[in-house]
Figure (cartoon, rainbow, N blue to C red):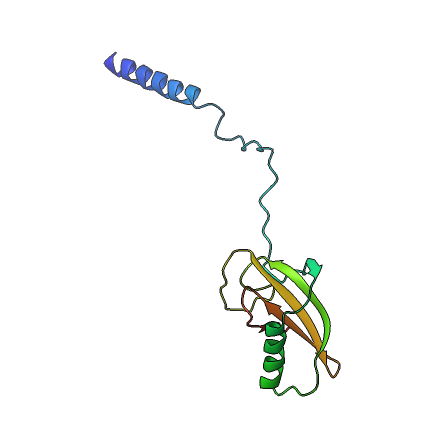
Length: 133
């Protein structure tokens, strides 16, 4: 008789615990109504900004960089655009490098020398970054 009471009490306890748990464990979770999380592969962004003039200090830095690479000839301005970059990579990330993850105001300057195109990026300083793709 004592054994029967323990078994009945155990069954009642088990029933009480499962009754309070809500939905059965076999039901899949209900959708939350939010779109699924999407990931993107980091990569260059297209410049979105307005045409602007190249400050003399930045133009001089471009000319000096071209000369340091042994490029001869006169650079011709193709475009200069004010851009807010999405990171310190200035829209031109390099493999194995880490960059600040913050918006960076700067500019993109495209020049040609002897029909060769050079894509320069600037952040907040006058130091150019040649974007090679």
